[in-house]
Image (tube, rainbow, N blue to C red; front, side, top):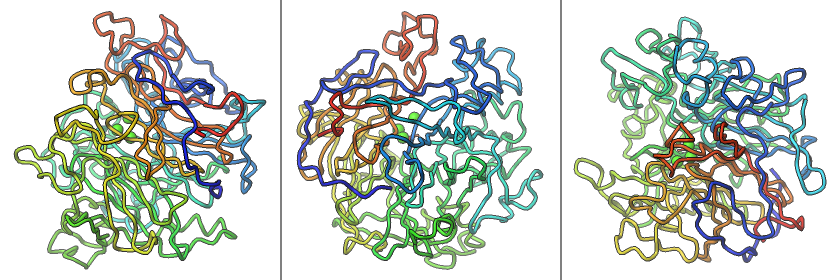
Length: 591
Ligand code: FEO
Ligand code: CA
Ligand code: CA
Ligand code: CA
């Protein structure tokens, strides 16, 4: 990743109003263009299938096209090792699928081939992109172009590799997994690899027999009406393939510069519903990875590598995430915090509490974190490390309607609002500014919500642009913090969110408490994914699930969810898309 540019002292754009329009709006002087939509060819040589607006692309064609529901994303300059702002690769996630939109006839005649098309629409895209003038193109064909799907072979690394709980009939050694799925947010390593994070993987699996404590803790259920893979593919039927769920819930490392490379699932980073993986370096060059587990009352984690990063040895970097110590955060009531190690044999993490080894413990990471008494948070989503302030870290806590409710965890200092409908952004400073510290001091950057609301659960305390349900979070190279929202489509612009319009992206410089709205998205979408070129002059973001809430885009009974963005084709379907944003005068974004 490039070294930071000079720190920004002020924002240079005029905040835009809230919007309910079915389009992407950016401030005056900026240009935003849909750039890589679901169904666009990824750029494989001799295999450039065109998108068919009626959903009739074949299963094989989908494996050569952009998947659905774009999410986290990162920039990689070409050639590798240079901070080239005009030519590079984008790696991006396709988080989930919508069977209602993926096929010409929806879920009628459900079969294994339909499930496979869905598997081909999830995972990761690697695309080559190039600037010409002030605009950008996807390079097609490209020798870098790649789709990683739910069936791409991957190696397991770290302590859980070869554990009994990782073995299946198809992989009796517990070493090789097919694919990655529910790829939410992401990370970017200093040695130029992409981290993709497996979030809501438990939604895919079904078990009819009574579920054990591990399966219950991770939310495996006895039904699935959304994906329906388990009906036709025994891999996702836990009654038949009991250990397959244990092979998901990990962080996966991908080398985007080598399309023949085998992705690796790093079990040392723990197993949960991984949102993202924010990578930074400790004072002595140990690698530190911050990670959220996005579910109500789940935890914030960090990993510290055993070995140190050496910029001269990229290949050695590839092994840094294979061994290290995983910690979970405890936010004390007095504003201090502790990173509690999840190490077999320490703090009750032994056979007396159901842990057999470090590898076994990592498969059961949530249970280990319960055992040591970590702080239950309001849905930790993205984490961002300030490039201009060592050891200063931020995390979006998107919302938690159950906080303080009967039978649920009460409010605490770090999660201070009952029925937290709008979320907040947590901040902490690691002791001595060192990300490898085991103690920190925390505070709350902002409580999201409307500033004029008298109801404490909905009252925001920012100046300027109001927002709720913060999710995507990243610094640019100038130290501007960008926040993207994911208000659920069941509440967008209604109920407590009435009048707040479509999902949006705002910017702030921490310390100012001033927020400006930079972007509003089309109807029914969330905004996610943030990748800046090294010169800060191009920003790529993703629009996920435009039109969510109504698969029938022409349904007049559901005008809130109606979207036919970006194609504006009344016969077509809304399509998740990467959007490229530049300034008309070629200047830096946000300044
Ligand atoms: Fe996939 Fe927590 O967002
Ligand atoms: Ca998210
Ligand atoms: Ca979210
Ligand atoms: Ca999402």
